[in-house]
Image 1 (cartoon, chains in turn blue, red):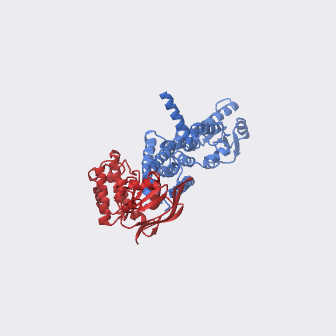
Image 2: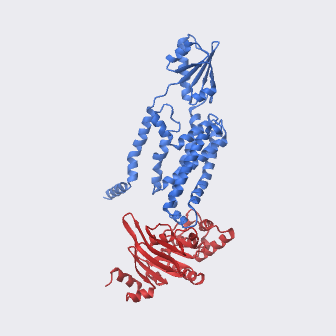
Length: 338
Length: 241
């Protein structure tokens, strides 16, 4: 009897909270669908450029399922520009293979496939000298996606903490009390941005220093650029979190934004290869702030990009932050016209 | 300027429900003005429209000759909400300091104002305790102190004495009367307790978003030939024939 009463009450409560209910049933489907499309994508062809070689090697490689282009001359710069996985230079019977290695698993695949193809051609194992554009032979997959994880954690925690803080301010009535003082709306938003931004900065410094010094994760570029990127990530997360918190009435509903806002972004951070995704899927990624954060972070930490090379990513992040902050300031109008 | 607050034909509805029927009200400068009415009669909504936290659907509110909302007015109006809007992680002093800073007081002024406000509500000895450890009454008093922090000309208090023991209630009322007499403040207070209504200089009785009677407590009793304000209220409400 008493148990039944509890069961009835819980059922009633759940039915009233339509949001929770919808999320409970539908969010897994959303994430599952995303994963279906993301893991379903085929690996794209590996692009190889061959220089200084006769046609036989080109032919052999073509048969081995490479997308081969023969060229008069080539360079590492061109590899980066044209997103070429490998460049094979043959001179006086010596082979020199330069691997882009932006994704270590891909580089290893190129290596393997080429060895097999060339072995079939000549009886003895060919000796190939290897060079790497990014990283080296010891590069682990973790080296390439750990930079994204740094940004992800900054985004995740700042989003939740700032969102819940503003929600608490809203439900406890302090926000309304605040708006009964001569404070301006932009001052509230700026206060939040600076206040929580400060903690986000400290978090970033701790995470980055730990990752680089203790876990020995590759950091080729400037640590200052890493910090700058993550300050922007924190700004975006903070402004998005406070914005979405106005659509939540309880802390639990704030947590519900994780599968809707955070998890889908993870799929587009490059932890899963983006190259093979279908076009429409890649387009979805481009509306997600973490996509740009990951691009910039991977560029700086792994590829050693300079400020100018990640400038576009940073500007887009800044634009996200500005848009969200503006909407935040406007949405406070709901409480006070001034 | 005779009127501190002048309300002309304001109305407000939430979703389909009309919370404030078109109503007009003038509140003179100086004195304690009581808004009396049962829960859900629209007292809080009316007060929030005076402070400028809710925009009326129609009509206008003028406070100290400025139409609400007006930024300068927020300096002159001290507001105490019905629920304690306090930062419970902070101490009492830190809460007061925070709000004092929003009014841009100098460090010296802030110290004086905090001391003054804390003394009125008798929290001086508990200022360094976190609000989370405060009792319900202490939180109420701290909220009142926050409303007093900028020394506003008009004090708007939404049920300030709920959950406060009779002794403290008495001392708060004495302080309100002192603020009226010595500092010439205008105080607007909402209540549903009749003994508090008796102490107001003027009263407006609110029912279902309408002012059903207004005047001094004595005048109201005469007008409705009632012994107490309770009777007045019941008579208008149709409870007593």
